[in-house]
Length: 244
Ligand SMILES: Nc1ncnc2c1ncn2[C@@H]1O[C@H](COP(=O)(O)OP(=O)(O)OP(=O)(O)O)[C@@H](O)[C@H]1O
Image 1 (cartoon, rainbow, N blue to C red):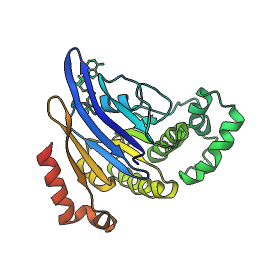
Image 2: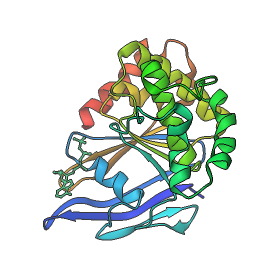
Image 3: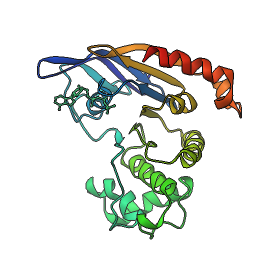
Image 4: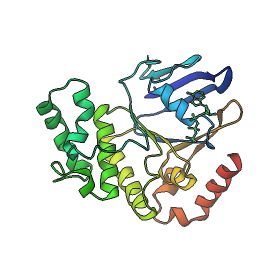
């Protein structure tokens, strides 16, 4: 059973079909990327999965239960989801819990053990501006994770980071996923990032857009230390660039 799946999702804007019969799935512990050119409908698909927008047709299922048009099941982080500067890191991380009417003390107790796991120990009482970009990103990811631990939808989460920090956050995120059995759907424009991070990649293309290709990245190749510099990596990259 897939953890999350969309079945035959169709979406129109102003009588124009933007998404047509989109079927994707995410298994427990997987990281799956959605790659597509700008304006193809990636964010629209995420908004539908998160229950923020209604599809014309189709269903979203979480562990075989229909969650179409309902919010609160899946955590969703947008690129512009910045930490609030006037709240401490703990204050930011527990925000989703407070919005779900969980008492502050209880939310803090629930969040506390995850600070170490997310590499944020001793930052609880600090303010975001005193942290590095990579640490702020990890805090935003922890806040997203605290909202719902089942599935994280991440819309270009790493694009604002400089190249070196991005690489560090990538390898940290892959280790984190294994440690806490995280399942992630990722939107990215960055083909290299998709190949490095993903178990599978869906290509969203066409007018209206649908899933035109699914690419599985060989897990054994991914584990190799110089995968990013290898011929195997370039073969994936060439294939994907030809499909976009
Ligand atoms: N609320 C809306 N009303 C009308 N059209 C919309 C609305 N939201 C998105 N669109 C249109 O739907 C299409 C898909 O937009 P969407 O934002 O999902 O694409 P995207 O792949 O996420 O783009 P980007 O990579 O640039 O963020 C675009 O043509 C966009 O203009």
